[in-house]
Image (tube, rainbow, N blue to C red; front, side, top):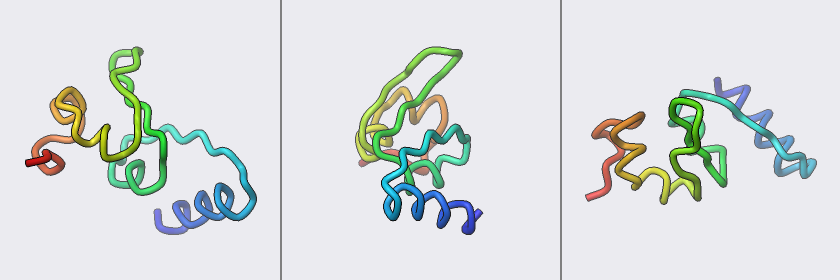
Length: 71
């Protein structure tokens, strides 16, 4: 996964390419993407920068569990 993340960063930052990433590995998504769009059951649940998405109670409930809860 590290090679994939490095390649995505290279494309996005080094070449100015927009990358559309569909992934369930939330650690990977949060480290690579801005903005983040979270979908649930075929609908947009929320969108924004990683910090805002990480703090959204709907995202925490649906995908992230307690490990990302903001105190």
